[in-house]
Picture 1 (spheres, rainbow, N blue to C red):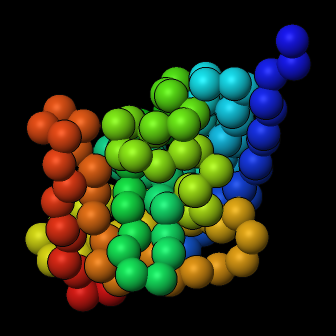
Picture 2 (picture 1 turned 180 degrees about the vertical axis):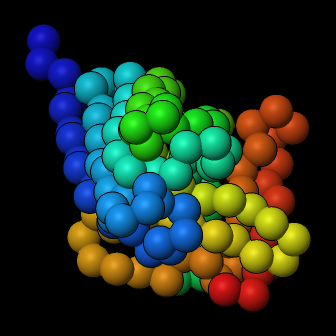
Length: 151
């Protein structure tokens, strides 16, 4: 019996130099992998300024609404490197109702009051507006939160 297998790589590039190691550009990659019903999301980041706590997100960016799923916290080591691995249901990511293939944006974000800083971002196919009408999915309460920002 063969299993359905899909794999996407999103290259992450620096968008805000104030969050990177001095004199170096932050970069990384996000791998989205679905094998049958098992989904995996792996972030690997380099040159992110040590000591800054960021969050890894994947975003399903579309025409009307952009839904972000929180993968976990990112805390880089002294060399500026960080890695995070996360598993989910590939057909219903974090109980959002979306499959893993719906997610076309990945990045490291810091949410502040009325602002979203995104030190490192990447896109699966081409750059797409993802900050407008951004909703962050919250699995614990099975609801979403609207995030307003002046971006």
